[in-house]
Every structure is written in C-alpha cells, then in structure tokens.
Length: 228
Image (cartoon, rainbow, N blue to C red):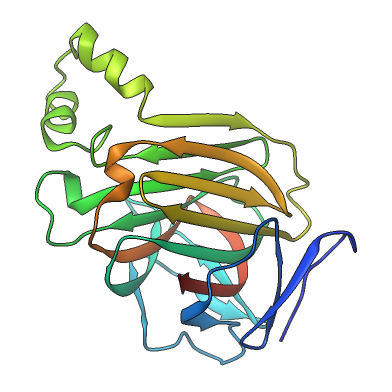
C-alpha cells in the first residue's frame, strides 16, 4: 500500500488495501486494482504503441519516440454503464494524459470511443466522444478535411467541458473519475474540477478503459476501477 497525499484535510477512504483521497463516497465494488508492486504489469493490462513499464513501484507511461500515436495502457471490462476510476499521478516530462472509456463492439464512433477525461497541469477536459468529436460521421468529415456545418459546430460545444486548474506537475495528485448515467464528474485532490452531462456518457456497455500518455513520461500509482 502506497500513498501520495499532501493535505490531511482530504477525505481518506480505505478500500481493499489502498488508501485513496476522494471528494465523494467511493463506489463499493472493486472490479480491478493495481498498486504496481510487481516487477511487471499484471496480466489484465494490455499495451499498444507503448514503452510503459514499472519503475520503483509505479507505472511509468511512455510513448515511443517514433510512435504515431500516444502510449496506450488498457484494461478490458465487463460491459458497464456506471463506474469510477481512481489513480494517483505525477507528471514527469509529459504534460498531459487521457483516461478513456470505449465499447470495442460499438461501430457508431471511431474505435468505439464513448467518453474520456484529459488531464494537464493547467486544464482538465471532459468529453462525450460517442455523440461528439468521435461520432463516426463527424470524425470522417474532419479526417477528409471537410468543414462542419454550423449546427454540428454548435452541437460539439455541448459535448465537452473545459476547465482551468492549477496543480504542481512535479508532485503527486489523486484523480477520481465517476460515471453515473449521463453524468461524468471529476475530482483532483478531493476537489470537484469538472462535470459533463451528455447522453453518450450513459452508454450501457463500456468494455474498455485505457490510460493514454502523451509523450514521455507520466507516473501512475494506486489504480482502482470500481462499480456501484
């Protein structure tokens, strides 16, 4: 068990051996957890275009220098609607990572993208990809260099939430993402920093979660997936 806390006033919750910092009562059922105490990633993890590894008891997210896509470290899920992901993180070169949820059988969006959260030291974004930027017809038009009509551009404004934050990239922080119905909430260090309500978030069969690390490196620890 490891902790990376900085303020004793945060709400501390003990769950399945991990002490985590939350701004909300956590979901009760632990579906998967990893404190990266082994020398290699657990077998539940998959990797794609990634040089990520375990170093000094943490997952180090690394994109290969010649890769055409950010590093992806992924966990398969049973089809889920409501869930939460908690992870401690520290920027160590990279300035951004995403936590993404997909349905690998869904064909209405690019690569089954449903929703995701992007985290950086100065901003956090929440996105409904299913009915927004990754919706197949929208992405296909963009990829082809076609201009989106005014109605689609206005629609896309409702499919994401961009929020300014200010965190020290060189210290550890605690992230909690919770999806309930069509609402996604995000806390950092116990503080609610973003909310998005959009119909795509309520997708009933999210079957894949991945951490996408931009460039090199982000450190991760105390990873947990929970369900209600």
